Image (cartoon, rainbow, N blue to C red):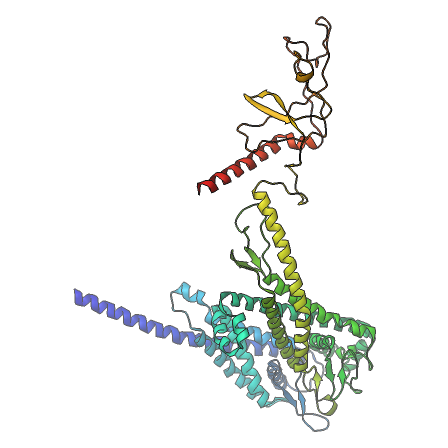
Length: 616
């Protein structure tokens, strides 16, 4: 029986090992299939678009084979690869290297989705299989994508737009590797491992800034701030392009009609303009930053000086380029865009550096000091605010990240469109990246420090108000009812027993109590006075009844005479019932039932807190 059990365990162990090997091999196969499917979907999308335009064209230059070659070439151009147009009037091959950034979004999203699905652990856990390692998933997706991409490049080499093999060998693997890595990263959450791998390469100051759990929080804050700054820059650039296009609407319309006459050709030009809108936004941001962009070899368009090439092809977006010259008022107004971007970076970092929203109206979960949300992330209690030095360091890191991102997009948005005067179009990437870093750091650091100090000041005020509320002390000027008034009052006189306990009330200035001026005459109700300030015992043993108002002393009356229902009468006679009067004005809040219950609850809580602290 023991031998049978051992054999069963060995078989189970061997089957488990074989199952894991099959799972890993199937994970690689799934990655290969996902990468190939992503490349195939991208090629199919471009093929459908080009074939629709070819079918709608009244005079196509080639057959369906030529249209498919163009679709494969455009797919490679969407990855940043440079194309070469061999069929020119001069016979000299002309390079085409301006990548429409909107076309780049499709292959990036497809590869990212393939990497995330290949490394997703949810499906493996539901099915009981072993999850695929990140390296296996990434390798499978990239190899599958490059396998299809190599075939597409070989096919496009036989058309009128031929890929440059050097650019193709660099750009297509780079896009596939980065997008697949981002997908695997998002599926596994490998941020901490990636940071630990990069930290040894960074300088000592950067290692201290991003080490540990708090360092990871600062890195995430810097990433969010860099992304927000880039969005602000590109949004401002797009706004500049839109304003300039509306200003030059006549020239843009003339260029649009001059390019083609058929509706299918105009539709193709419109699609090309839409695909180049992100490029125009990047160019507008480069113009606002100061370096500007190159519009022809040796011709720079910047806010201080605009010198576009004299012979530009007619195109609607090029009609929005400022005229030769520069230094106009609206050109200087473009400098507001980088200022807003720097302030956005500073505000995001200050939101993460300062305290959370602070305590609420009363004690409760998350109302203690140091708890709350910081930059959209939950902050555990006891976490202090960042120092000014660390806040400035995170702003510098965000500025560098924003500069790298913007510089990379600036490099992709430009390129050659021909030879000679058309050899260079677009911004210079290193100039744009450096300008972004200078603007964001120069504007973001003061904004982050000032906003951080202001948030810390508001948090201190909220904590002080919360402590006073927990002690049962009314706070003036906080927008709530002032149920407690501890202003000084005058001398206190005795009042008759109420409920078996002698009570006290404030003495009314200028009015003598009836018990002191007329012996033998019972105390009569007094005239209410608005200047009376109520007094409350520190810890009453029984509910405090409202003080009986006092009125001036009444003279003796004839027993046989008739009196009003409110007359107190003579000693020994039952006093007539006095109809109750409704209290109005500020005293109604103090003497109301709700106010009395609130006072009692506050006093009981204060007594329990004092008794508990003494017991501890």
